[in-house]
Length: 247
Length: 54
Image: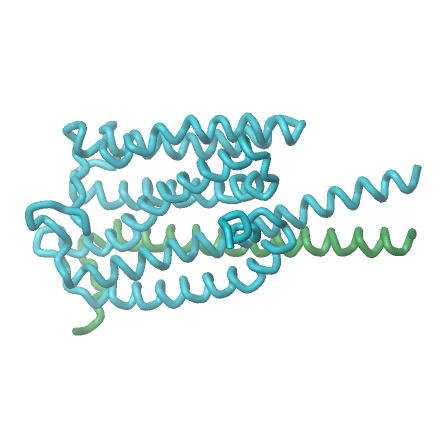
């Protein structure tokens, strides 16, 4: 079987609808189970000797921030497929993931700010990490606004896809900002930390579970939102057929 | 091991962060499901109307 057939369900709306009908509830259920287990462990682990109880903020802040970046990668790939290969379903996928990405990014900023105040003594600082994540949010909002601003849906889709591709430049800046510049935000201290500066094992389980919950939540919401856009496109096409029939 | 819900002086930062996250997910889930259901019903209604006219 070649790759074209393997991924046909992602390009064929009917097959996608059949796939997503069972995949969305399964992903949603797994995500909810991971969230419940992750939250239970969040409040079972002891407080950190330096950060006290604010360490629990890590289990909602890091997943929101890392999945927000992952969602933008999905937005970029879907926009590329829509722009270059004129895949209608890819365009709907891009359109569907932008609002979810915006909410995840906003959550990363809000929870980060609520974590920053007791730890850094400030709600906000214009350092490279925080500013680049704010820019990420602006790219998401810009994408949503651009799609809504133009009346011609095809033009709007093309313009928004170009904006999404331009925004990909920001992703390495978000990721490596803590290494390239001297920032208030700490470097990676989770699974990719160097020199024994990693996450203590006791915090790893809630971090992994909450990460899976946020990832699965995105997957389920993305599928449901694509389904909504497929139904909307069908409704509009039927509405046009009806209008033609009345003439 | 027992549950530790007493965040002490950090409660004013911790609980709003969890509450805002929970509200955001509740909104995303309800908005996504309601929008999907609305467009599905609309498409089915229009399909039925089209079938009647033919």
